[in-house]
Amino acid sequence: MKRIVIVGGVAGGMSAATRMRRLDESAEIIVLEKSGYVSYANCGLPYFVGGVIEKESDLLLQTPESLHIRFRLDVRVKSEVLNIDSAGKSVVVKNLETGAEYQLQYDKLVLSPGASPIVPNIPGADRAFTLRTVEDVELIAGAVAIKPKSAVVIGGGFIGVEIAENLRHKGIATAIIEATAQVLAPLDPEMVSFVHAELLKQGVALHLSNGVSEIGPDSVTLADGSKIPADLVIMAIGVRPDTSLAKGAGLTIGTRGGIEVNEHHQTSNPDIYAIGDAAQKTDALDGGATLVPLANLANRHGRVVADHIAGVKTRTVAAIGTAIVKVFDLTIATTGWNEKRLSAAGMKFLTIHTHPNSHAGYYPDAKQMSIKLLIEPNTGRILGSQAVGTDGVDKRIDVIATAIRAGLTAPELADLELAYAPPFSSAKDPVNMLGYISENVLSGLVSTVDWSKLEAELAAGAVLIDVRSASEFANGTIPGAINISVDELRDRKSEIPTRKLLIVHCQVGQRGHTAALLLTELGFTVKNLDGGYRTWRNSPAGLTN
Ligand SMILES: Cc1cc2nc3c(=O)[nH]c(=O)nc-3n(C[C@H](O)[C@H](O)[C@H](O)COP(=O)(O)OP(=O)(O)OC[C@H]3O[C@@H](n4cnc5c(N)ncnc54)[C@H](O)[C@@H]3O)c2cc1C
Image 1 (cartoon, rainbow, N blue to C red):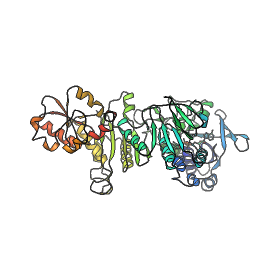
Image 2: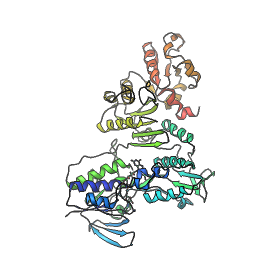
Image 3: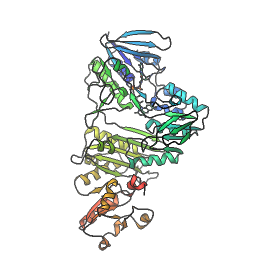
Image 4: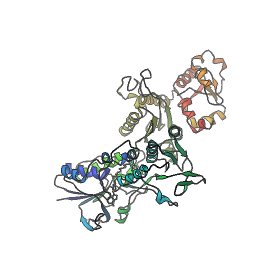
């Protein structure tokens, strides 16, 4: 009988275990988990702190008993794997309740030990809570129960903003300290400004571009010397792959610091597989090594590993990097690469910004969202997308992620036949619109200017025309713009400077597009400001004006 030993009994490990059983009734499957729980919803942990998820038991999706009844899995909690003898094909396990250690042979070993929260070496760091396991959340919930007045969350990543929101739900004065200039690193600056505004609106204090130098008994001292009250401190500055067992076993650690695996998720020892947050992934965009510490891939790769062990044909699953997070009333979703990463890699890209409604504007409760699409100029390949809004963001990013996976080009987004009725969408869905705009830009029908290039174009002599109505113009415009509404362009043609590059802008880019084509027909050289005033207003250029 084949024995499969799995280290880690949550996302990746448990997916591998249950799939394995479905494929092979005769295999002996042993899951070793050092915490007291398996198959728990770590993604739900922040919501237990805030009371959105009321019962701790709701976080526990399975128990060792239920897994035995249905799958005949041998699940051992409070069982830590101390080391691996890859030559002898065995692991040493410590029973954390009794302290007893024992050796366990395996035919195949699957490592899914996850990632460890990074805790920097600063004075007082031991007072900070981290959030990874049910035990962690029990500690935090215990600390929240004694009604702290103030909390500091160090790190503005996904977990940091989620826990900050939930601490606010508990009425705790909460601050986020973030070393970079923004929260949520996958967003580019003109997209994250909506999130900053929402956090501030909901009473979360933001200390950006600031580190923490010391955690005191009831405060946190920042790198700039200021002190913030902190009855409670949560450390959420990121995670690093847990490679301790792999290193001890002499397995190859990859360039990104995760366990290196091949397309079947086999490590440098073919009898040992690694999946989930501990393992490196292959990036779908450039084929390079990447880390994507998210649940979808951990689950997917767990299944693929079980298939491979069982001899089932598998497909290679490269990582696109699709993520979503809720920040109070906002939904933020991203897929693929962002502009910062593309620029750092020296890759060429075009940007498209739109601000469509979640559904037909004439049907009640349509909500405006903002979407950014990044495209490879010559091929139209979709490189990435980001969306922020209150409704409908999730499905747009999921469609774009699907398009990336299917290899569709940006103009082909126009061809997607998406479900439409007024309460749900528009006949031209926001994703279709991205396709139309891509087609217009890539075909050369219209030229656009990104918000980040506007200042340079104006400095080089371009003339900026705000083609919105006079009342919109009066409510705020880009410095230096003259106002001729799109409907007046033909009649006021004589007022428009000739032999100069014209840059037109409207509120979101749509009337600007019409204006750009009209003025081109009238003999002018024109570019449309991508995403219009709304994109510029929320960009660093607009926010500092
Ligand atoms: C608070 C929080 C919120 C999250 N929210 C989201 C979200 O909304 N969306 C999303 O996609 N992802 C989210 N994630 C990330 C997601 O949970 C992980 O990507 C996923 O769980 C990784 O699966 P894994 O199997 O690699 O590791 P895990 O699910 O972390 O499981 C690893 C397990 O291995 C055990 N272990 C480690 N070492 C040993 C050892 N030596 N012996 C025995 N057992 C060991 C650990 O105790 C742990 O239980 C969140 C994570 C956290 C912590």
